[in-house]
Image (cartoon, rainbow, N blue to C red; front, side, top):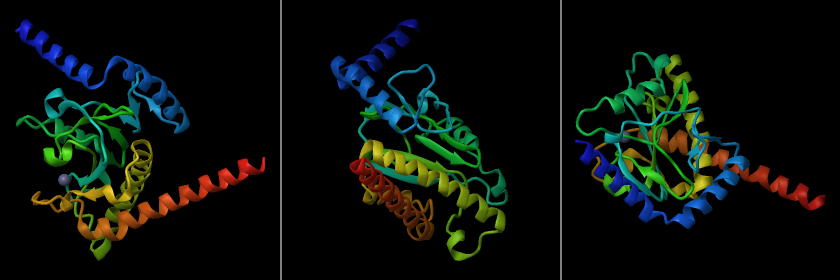
Length: 242
Ligand SMILES: [Zn+2]
């Protein structure tokens, strides 16, 4: 048994080691520190080259994800299907439990967003992120994935959502959009590559809701990006004047 454990860790170590040679690992530490400070990011516990984006960091069980660092060029948005009857209880800790509790090898995403804030569930670094098991390996191998707590977000657009549901969807979307803006910046991901799970061919999925995503989420995201571009232009002009 011990021998198998040792071999397992040796394989994990070698995989990571060969993907990121020593010199680039040290480079990444320096750069990540700068990036983190520039963007007011907190370090993951233990302080390392890892990046932390959420309000808390709680890693999923090792069986739920692929132990390989991948370079993300896409962000996939999901909803996790928590009960529509209790939107005031849509929380990311429940998302974590749902993913961790699976027995068939497990599922995973990088973030859960709920009324309790943003939870980061997998290790992330400037050069790459741990590969999740969220939307099939074709997308998992180059994406960051975010699970928003709740379901039927389309109701926000169709007018079928109760006041409690509207409050929850608006609050969770706001948090998610804020997170996406930071991730797009750090990993240099264009808005065309921010997609809903339903857009993945053959997935058979409808989350997070096409109407919600196209008529509410993306316009909000565009607005946020325009605003932050405007701010950085203003800052640029101010520093030119000085
Ligand atoms: Zn999904």
